[in-house]
Length: 250
Ligand code: 1GP
Figure (cartoon, rainbow, N blue to C red):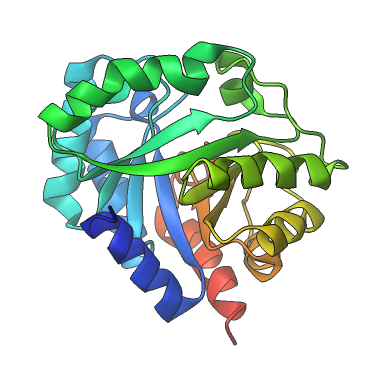
């Protein structure tokens, strides 16, 4: 069943063509820093805030970050979990994700089984997502024991994305890894987009207007950036990315 946050994302995508989401890594910020980032990102045109990272933060800290960001912004907060410890009752929704190219069953279905009852208890909206690590893969690739799909094998990304869609996942995420030197190439985004009906998310290493425009014009429905807001100048950096995405519409 499509919930309110998923509906919000889909409506925004159909109105705007492609949208931007800001990722905040709770490990790298205090609650007040997180809310300052989120406020500026919202003012610059970001559509939602994702909260999550690749390593461990205490649930107390995560809760504090989520609560503070929620109070400060009012745009949807979607958890981006790396494990069952990344679930906060104060968020609006959670990417209910399986790392489709992991060799470890824990990241395919194990963590999901452990987390599902908590998600139900907290009444979080689960949004089914197939997560695919490509290129360098970064920390997420190592922690998730993925075999990253090389950039010159778009057909493998298509096969993984299709498998996710056939399993019922309504969102597919091509992840180059946070801070990747090269973002997901257009050929890979285009190939996946051509073959799936699911909503396509692209992230990892997107730092400029040109890269955001390239991803959106190749078919990304949602572009996620995290790193660029970690070193200040949030307004300028997010505005630049959002402007790149908007340019694709014009
Ligand atoms: C990482 O795709 C996201 O999970 C965002 O990557 O931090 O490189 O923007 P960056």
